[in-house]
Amino acid sequence: MHTASFDVTSPDDVDATVARIERETGAIDILVNNAGMQRRAPLEQFSHAQWEELMKTNVDSVFLVGQAVAKHMIPRRRGKIINVCSVQSELGRPSIATYTVSKGVVKMLTKGMAIDWGQHGIQVNGLGPGYFETELTEALVNDETFNNWLIGHTPSRRWGDVEDLAGAAVFLASRVSDFVNGHILYVDGGVTATL
Image (cartoon, rainbow, N blue to C red; front, side, top):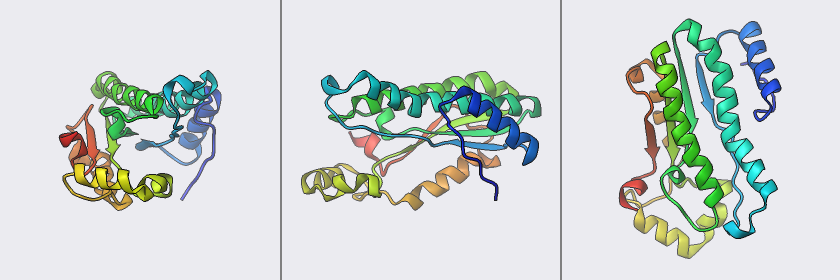
């Protein structure tokens, strides 16, 4: 296994690191853009600095890393890019308007990438997780009112387990999805179907 740490919000760092990986480790055939953050606050209290930090992390990183990797995929005429979206690419919730905006942009950037790069044999799709029980959602899981509301509005009647994402990610990364392009695959237990 090879690893490389770099700032996904820095154009220079992204370009240099992707070039080094391609040169020293080999071709990047599959890219999963998964950098992300969330800050909860009423929209009127959200500072411009918080807005910029969230957009750089959630949106700029997808553009920068996707573009840098695609420049290497295009001459090879193959590649898979999976951008991690969210059910919030479609749905709003109180106190996360900026996160919702960022994930809506990632959804549309995914479609734009697919349109521009599909002709070069590259498939770009989005993976849209719903509500998953992790340490980041622990407060929501422990909020009895929200927990009951969510389970009651999720056709699968449960929170997602991280393992629920594996099959969808493997599908989007594999040859069986070669004719799937510009699609957002929601793994949400049916939340987007019911809300």
